[in-house]
View (cartoon, rainbow, N blue to C red):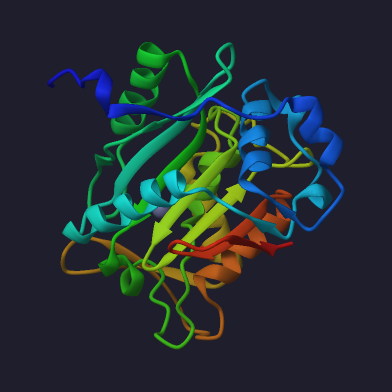
Length: 268
Ligand SMILES: [Zn+2]
């Protein structure tokens, strides 16, 4: 593999308020302006103790143009039908947020764990930043494939495995971002999030997925192409319902937004 150049990592911004100032503002107002959201990411890089309780997540979050640029680049590049992956990290000493400018390519229906490790290791090595946000995309064909949802009810939704990655103790990020169709989904861990600490042999991503699919009456179905989709006889139950169930069980917060737009809290 070719070594990646320093230029693929770009600083979003190094200005900003202190953590103390930001926490003083928590509880006032209904939205996080971008500065506050950014400050929260800086705080999270210091560890789980900085996670906010679920009730303190604002109704609306504003992203800045750099974030929209990152998300829309991933959206555009996913048109080749392959999932894309990127990372956002924080260098605590420099109080700086870094993003991988060029997203990595995964496979059609998942990002291999080696790709994830490559991106995280590279960020640590090159800019001394720890992973805080993990971003991936579902290419367009998955819109009708992954959950087998009918056109009328179809909305962007994480796979159970995506949410497992945020919940399992072996993973260190705090925020999972999904770019799907024209939508952006952000899922946050909270102070009350129950994290799964079982050995991955005992509780794997697959076991977790099977548990939730079974709970909601989904069946796996393998297409001729070899790709697996999840279908439900009860057409009223969608992939999004499964997202809500997992988020409620593990006290996660989910925001939904459109390309270029603000994020709105949809769970709880
Ligand atoms: Zn996914």
